[in-house]
Length: 275
Length: 274
Image (cartoon, rainbow over all chains, first blue to last red):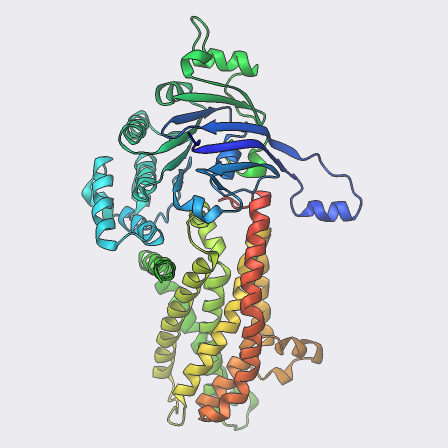
């Protein structure tokens, strides 16, 4: 069976000097070493599975998510989504993929209805059908009807994140990239979003890639897990298989990486991401 | 046809969303419009004020009209440029830059939608400013050729859009400095385009820059149409430079934007902060 996502020897480095690096190079000034955000990453995600990538902040998770989401060009290696190359065929990949990132990205003065109507138009959904689906999805996510027409800056972060999940579902993606979707949420919102991910897994023909540093979340939601550290995939297996007898997944992570789930600043500054 | 219709629909999505955002920020919109009207009035009052200061009579009515055309047309051009040049910065400021660039649409669709919004929004503002300023002065617009003026504005907008699109690419290359550079470009256009004075009064080296600014030709042609009522046929010589500038800047703008986007994709600059 063709994998949903096939990542082959993916390498991504960032020049810490940015645009100034070209000038420094031209002037013969010393350059800082490039930051290796992804170092020969190989991943195969099967169709219909929830594939987790766990790692600390700065481990390369968000960089990987951005490359798959066509928001970053790799230096070398390849990423294929349902057989389409994310570089050569980016627009096709974008049509059947969506991403929810750590922070809900909306015009915050607009209402959920206005933001999602915008998405519907972008994706060519008929206005009446889109309107109906927007209300259906948002209500199912527990957003009150009156809140659907109010500016999003009047909603809690948890509610905003639910609207972000709703936006992703509105476009019926066959690949859903969830980049730390529950980070910073209150426990109830976190549980709601996690329940919804389960629902997507069980009821939609969608493949989910979940980036997280929440070990409980990874264990509960993912069919398979990869541990990423300093841009390298250390191990990949079913959550239960990663743990030794009597070990929690967090313990297993510490054993594999040599450190707890803590902030590494490696590619955070360069990629502007959460890890 | 269906893909084209989808791309047009997606372009319209940007127009609709941006107008909705304008409505939600209505308080600021009123304040900015008030500021623009007061600025236009302040500039127009320089003409009667000039008579008092100089202590001799000159055709103040013609100078008022000259200044009013300058302020209103500049209010329009500045707003078009502003809306287009800051389209990337706006997405970044709202935090939607990644989702917008991840949308399955051609980049030109995003640019066209943002540009269409810029033209419609700016035109509406300029009309309001003109109407209010006209209430303060006894403007003699009987001889004005409005069809010609509208044609000038339409063609002139395209050339300015090209430069605006190039300026919009700057924040993709330089996260914060890009927006700053855009403001510098905008201010330079104000200086060299003859908004409040004929460009002939500029030093030679500065006047040279007026040749490459589409705003110069728009203002000259608008004054010919509104102050002198020049016919559409007689306005044609003004269209030549505008069409030439459009033919160069519009495709170049789209190309530069595409190049800048590829740079941003390679260097991780499609991020919210910056």
